[in-house]
Amino acid sequence: MPHDAPTPPPAPAQARGSANARRVEAMAAAARRRRRLQKLLPWLIILAAFLLWEAVVRGFQVDPFILPAPSAVAASMVQWWQPLLDNAWQTLLTTLAGFALAIVFGLLLGVLIGSSTLLYHGLYPLLIGFNSVPKVAVVPVLVIWFGIGTVPAIITAFLISFFPIVVNVATGIATVEPELRDVLRALGARPSDIIRKVGLPRAMPYFFASLKIAITVAFVGSILAETVAANKGIGQLMMSASSRFDVPLVFAGLMVTAVMGVAMYAVAVAIEERTTGWAMRGQAEQNVASLNG
Image (cartoon, rainbow, N blue to C red; front, side):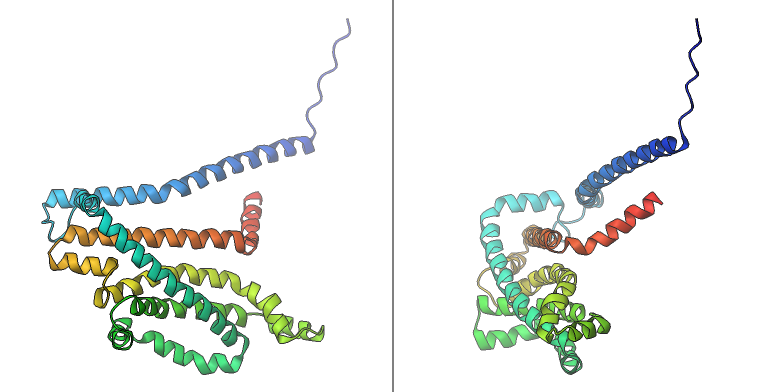
């Protein structure tokens, strides 16, 4: 019987193709593991921090008046959940109101400053000087003007979150290349067209970066004003608790504020990913190319 012909070895191109396919599959699996780790890592770090906190307080027998354990803070949150919820809702509404005003006026002023060199150099020193004024010194003036209540807290949240938005939007618009502006003008584009079609899209990543900063500091402004002149809010609740030396309730107010800040930060990140995902495309392609290389 005739012997079968020996199987020819795979072509070099086929071997390279199989190796590349295995490499791509391994990279995809590593990327999936990395994404799972990125989702779990914040929770693991938070859990480890609370466990360490609890162990330190119990191990060194720290007085709850100095530093309450997380278990004591959790018990206080359960005991005072209704006042915490009511005051947290007030603080959240106040912060969002001031933050919304900061977005509107910060975006408008940022566009004006970024699109005009004269306004940029004329108003920037004024903005820096105003932002350098401690907001705690402004709150008593606001109380004189508007009285005790919600209005000073809204204005303080607006003032403290206004500056990052203005600076980032102005920077994003001002960084449009002069050559691109000249080409667009030669094609008949008006200054408003350049700002609307080029400047604003260019400023969007800067804008959302400023939102993630502004929403967190807006809570600082609200609670700062509530500790000085408010009838309701987390700041007022914390001051009332500290006057009774109820330190666990003070820490419970801090925890609630931190949760609200993280939640609003997550909302800003989600909107950023849906709105300006194109800005990260080049970086992602560069990372893939470096892995393939």
